[in-house]
Image (cartoon, rainbow, N blue to C red; front, top):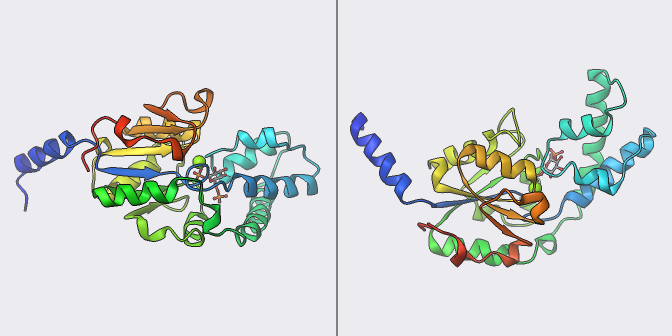
Length: 231
Ligand code: B16
Ligand code: MG
């Protein structure tokens, strides 16, 4: 049994080491499933005669299936039965499109970055709001890089709540301050900051400007810019 005082000291030591793990979001960071989410929601919206544009799809970045449904169908009073049927139908279309995903769908620079971090001894995790995340990373053939997976099935409250990232840190056995999150969604940056983690935002400053570091793409990330990497 670890003495209480020793444990506190160990935790303080661990916190001083700073960044020991990188937690990657999936959609918009490792691959672009947003296009497939768009096509699936669009097919559903057309069938239900509800307006839905690519611009509307941007608002769904990083948020859960239920929150997406609520945004698209906000004008309609849906029974729970109907809501579940609509989400199931959309997910069926989405999973049809997922069959086409291959390693060719990895975003530029992803494999190089994962390899570099692994070679340095950094722990790696994936944290996605998607309940389909495991299928996607299997198809991308990158599952073996990750020491922990947190997805839409792991927690009740997804982004912008911090739960998904805290779950990933817990799976890694690390404190939040030892983790750096790479995210493309505003909701994801909010979640990671609330969790007390360092953040890299991928995309325009209007969207991810609250992050500690902002890059236009994963390929543009410069590890030498990041303060306090301890792996
Ligand atoms: P599913 P991320 C998110 O993935 C998507 O950005 C978001 O558009 C989607 O609604 C959400 O996953 C849930 O996906 O319907 O497959 O459970 O960016 O957190 O990797
Ligand atoms: Mg994302």
